Length: 256
DNA sequence: ATGGTAGTCTAACTA
Image (cartoon, rainbow, N blue to C red):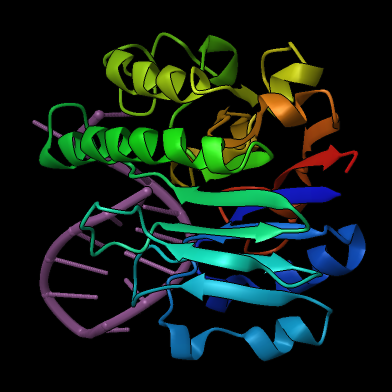
């Protein structure tokens, strides 16, 4: 079972890329972030013609998440239970006996801002919810745009991306480690220890052309799935296509 | 990075 995540930065603009990528890679599940569209505009017919069913929740201009799967998704959950949030950043569902939690983690803008405080509160709410979720669903995959680079191997310049910088700050990394402490594992690091593998490159200042990236799109697998995770990777290819998203897909193979 | 580009929408925000 191949499961992937991709922040598409507008599904309206990126639908041709998503279609091309689904055709060539044939994932069983792909979760999307930043669809940036209201539900009545979601292209579920176009995706169905490629063999994918969609569950989704979106809003105009910002955020928006979706789960596409070859077999139908069940037990759909939108948002973090008990956490009142107008921003559409979370959708979960069960596919083929695997619980899939798609997260578009708050960016946080800059350390010390209101948006940063919201990010930390949001991550705390996610932590509480996932603690319950992993008890109910031992076969759990938590994936998406985490907007946190786990360690210095995951940033092109650790001097810039330090413990006072957004996406790498001490409090963000502590919040991330607390998620791992629930019994989750960064699938990429089960298979690759190297520095310099990135999933996002800033549009500004030619990040991709300069090789200035961060690994902030992650696929976490639960203890029960760890030994079944046969491969994990980052597909850089779509980032080279014309008019790309600033993120590229990340994926895992599970022997289930 | 008081910078830069992209998406939405056509001013100003979010990333």
